[in-house]
Figure 1 (cartoon, rainbow, N blue to C red):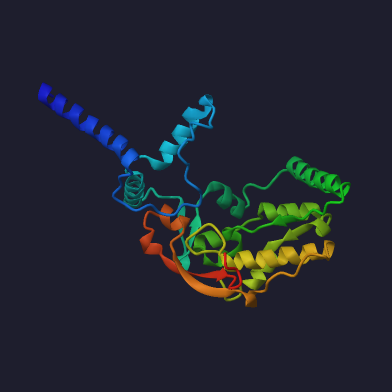
Figure 2: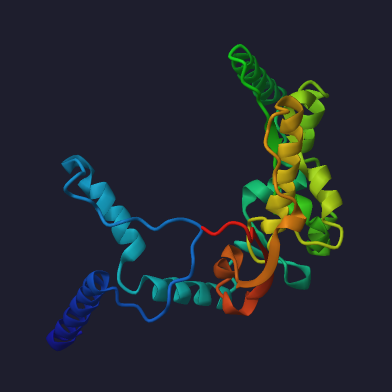
Length: 275
């Protein structure tokens, strides 16, 4: 490679670096940002931030706002999908997407059951919290929330559906053996009953939808009222207004094709709430 080629490469490299730097300041990007399930880092407040924290806050801000960030993210997932390396998403039946993370999948397969020592630690920890709060006249409720794969496993690919094992949830319930029934609420049986003909998790997201959240809220309030009878009356599903909203979800974005997985989902709102 001759001197001219070296010079051209250096100039091109410098232009790329400069474009990224300028893009950060002027917010240049070829693609619109997707909504994220977290708040992006704010610009550092140097006036009220200790000097020793400046590097950390600057790095956090740059990571969330560097030039052409959305373009790079989109192109990355597009390439990963083409070479079949996007293994974070399970493409299931009827357009359902599931998060393909080892923690969730290994738990579903029953390969990560807690040993006796861990079961004893969890039991002792839970009992300790109950006792500590009881001495202070504070009620305690431990809520087991089902993840998407345990509540909507009927939509999983058949080859995965057939491999279901004993989950951590089942192991813990067996270990507790009714010991904490007064202080524990397992939402899986209730939501499994409620979901007849309904989706309680978003098809293309890791989170439950408004209906799932409402039914969980309703169950929690109901059991708390047994301990705290003076709790005020809560709204019912009939009090809420249901409308449809277009979403794609975090799993749709992880798949690299958010627009392909856009769908309509029920949204609940209180017509009496003017805020």
